[in-house]
Structure formats: structure tokens, C-alpha cells
Image (cartoon, rainbow, N blue to C red):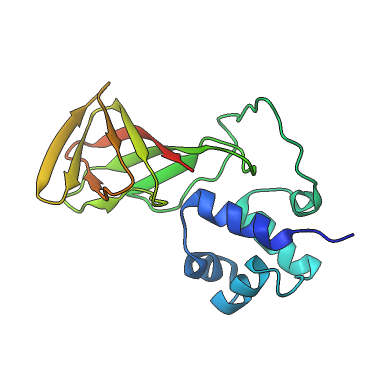
Length: 176
């Protein structure tokens, strides 16, 4: 049986909005090896898949499962990838599955004058502020969003966010 392991690794990485280099650094593998795996040029040994599954917080069996489209999925608060940056913490709110039309993240941003790039996949984005306020910088435009506010950004817009408060939380939805 032939499994599409590389595509699943790439999907997990892109869902998390991280680079090959980040995966390589966190797992101890070279970026070249991660690229070869993602392009299905090599079939990784079980030890490699084990380390990747630990990093991506999925069971190793995930790489061998056939995709069965689900009509709904529940993601418990204790599940999902959580980043390890202390100032910009994001958590994936959706299961890692193919055939999705969006990705959703919950982001906690601590007070900082340093703006952070939002996760970006070159498609439309929607941001909803849950608590506190967030400053959105779009080129020279600076927009202050408060709890309950939202902003829609088309695919051509790149932006950065920062929080002047102790901790701001917001939801980002990326269209696929």
C-alpha cells in the first residue's frame, strides 16, 4: 500500500503556519530532509515519523490513515497545536484534515511595541478580537480593534498586529 505521508506532513506544517526551517529546528532534522519527505521523494522511517508526530501533536497512525470526509469535527480545548513563543501564542482550533475551506487559530498576544505578522497563506483572512484590544498595521494605516470588533482582509493585504495591553486574545480565520 502506498501512503501519501509527505502531503500530510506539508498540510500539518502549513496549517500551523510554520516554515520548513522551523520544523527542522524543532525536530532536529535538516530542512532538506523535511522537504524530501513533503515532496514524497523518500519514505521516512518509523523513528522519523515518530518524532514528526510528536512535534505536530498527532498520533503516528495519522500518517497511514485514509482520508474520510467528516461532516463535523469537535476539537477539545486540550487538543490542537500550541506555539511556544511566549509573546505570540497561537492554537489551532481545527483538526488537521484535507478538504477544508478554512483554518482557524486562537491567538494570545502579550503587551509589546513589536508588531507580529499574522498567519498568512496568501488568501483572505478574518480577525475577531475576543478580549482587550489589538492594533492592526496595514502599511501606513493603523487600526485599533477592541473586544467584539472584527476585520476582514482580502488576499492582497498583509498586516501586523500588536497589543498595548497585558494580554489580548483574538481569532484568525484563513480561507483556503
